[in-house]
Amino acid sequence: MRYLKGYSLLLMASLAACSKSSNTTTLVGNWIKRSEFEGVARNAAASFVIDNKAYVGTGYDGLNRLTDFWMYNVDQNQWTQVTTPFPGPGRSNAVGMSINGKGYVGTGTDGLTKMNDFYEYDPVQNKWTPKKPFPGSGRYGAVAFGLGTKGYIATGYDGNWLKDNWAYDPATDTWTQAQSLPSGKRQDASVFVINNKAYVCMGTANSTAITDFYAFDGTNWATLNSIANVSDDSFDDSYNFAGSGAASFAMKGKGYVVSGIKGGLSAATWEYTPETDRWTQKTDFEGAARQYATGFAVKDRGFVVLGVSSTLQLDDMREFDPTAEYNKND
Amino acid sequence: MTKRNLIIAGIAVLVLTCIAWLTTREKKAAGHGADMLAVEVEPFEVNGGWGYKVNVDGHTYIYQNMLPGVEGHRVFRSRENALRVGNVVADKLTHHKIPAMTQQELINMHITEAE
Image (cartoon, rainbow over all chains, first blue to last red):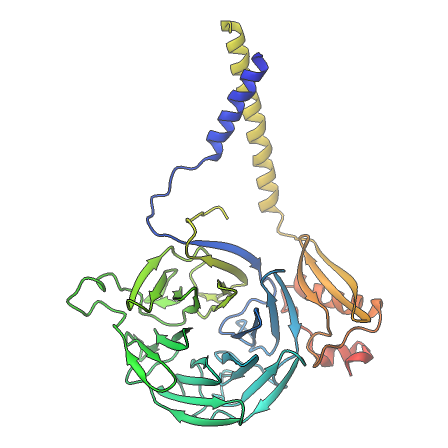
């Protein structure tokens, strides 16, 4: 009996030792460490998602511009190296997008040249095919997104900051100039697609963070509320996240912009609700604040991988669950 | 319960807590100190040929069910070829190099199925 009491006391003591005081933060959200991408650490990679698999490749490891491409299986948490898009030197700050079950990568820089070549990836054949080059100026730091049966490459830097927008039709392998952004020339912007609309935000030009925010439906750009405290209303009083080189993704009907350069490196995570055109701050990114990370969503699960923090190339992979309670121990 | 029993129980709890604390502390220290993770290569049969897994700390980090960096879904002809290439990848990983292979590297290793 006395042992029983002793053990129950011990149990209570250990329970007390394990429990943590309640969180003081009111932000909601949870970053879960998903995988260590050790050995392939890089920043400014290109990515696209096909059939619940994320493809991530190219980028800069601090020494070399890379050509290798990898497929990430979120269920198995494993990487498989696929074939490379192009022979010769690699590149960073290229763009990636998927259209109709195929992946596309183009533009970017090898450090000297601003590129305009463009490639298609067929996951069934594990094969890249060169396609009609991007007809806009060679550039890096653009954004790309697929809408319906077409893909778009917009903004970027070709020596000047840009706001032009080009549509690619894979059925005919042709490019058409589409409507440019109304304003806000920029590089290193973020984009996420919700309900067949592309939301383009963030970015930088002339060392200034761009606050113009637009949505593109395939034909026209709609001007949304700026991501800065510019209105007389109170909703934007806390908007302090304008910056560049952030990771972005959309899941469950909302858009997310994570980390990036906002003055300095920032770990902030902001969530966009299209119905109300409002942003909400979520729990900060748990990993090191970083620039040029890759964001993507698979099966309505958001991931942020890779990136660079100051000069340190990062290799970690984190999943974001916006509805979870923050748990700093996972 | 007598006073003596209470004291004995109290001491037992203290001692056990201390032991538990010391053990977990040592475990934690060992976990943090071990920056050398085990990297293992495991060939496996796939699609009438061979592939390899590179396991890091017991978890499959690279699952290579086709020739890396080569067009198409080609497989290694033999267990030995898969193991040889897997070992090069593991070597790159442990030397903090990008663990990617090029077609040329495979050809240089006389992996003729990559030609």
